[in-house]
Length: 181
Image (cartoon, rainbow, N blue to C red; front, side, top):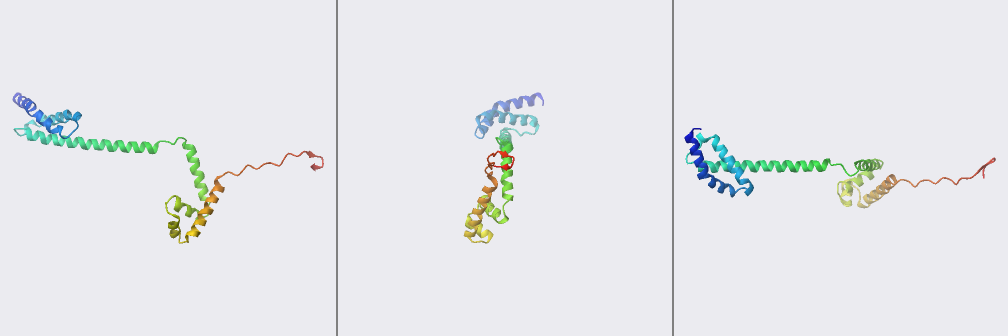
């Protein structure tokens, strides 16, 4: 840029800067105004030979584009932040991940141990969220038949998941030469 172009640019900054800032103030938070105005004039500086005279319309159009770019970048940052937060929450281990995994495996093994009809009855209600009447319709059975299946399945699950009472040993009897007394 020549000395006369430097002077012309400085004059535009002095004269048009406040007008560009007034436009920008209506579109961005107060903390961002100076950054947008500065970026607008940086772009003007780089293309000063191509900027029409008087430059105010071009400067406001450029400020409008800078604002748009700034908003898109903010949306991308927010979307990225939201995705990272979701991934962090999903990847965060449970308080006792080993215990949760063991419980899940035990539940899956218990389900696998049920007869197919009982397992399907439980899954339709528990996992698919169907009412007993809806699940009965899916299976093509009467609601009463379905309720009997789920009742039996729950009982079988209790039997499979609740550890049996420890068996008590026979009382100690002294052994004699002839055998037990």
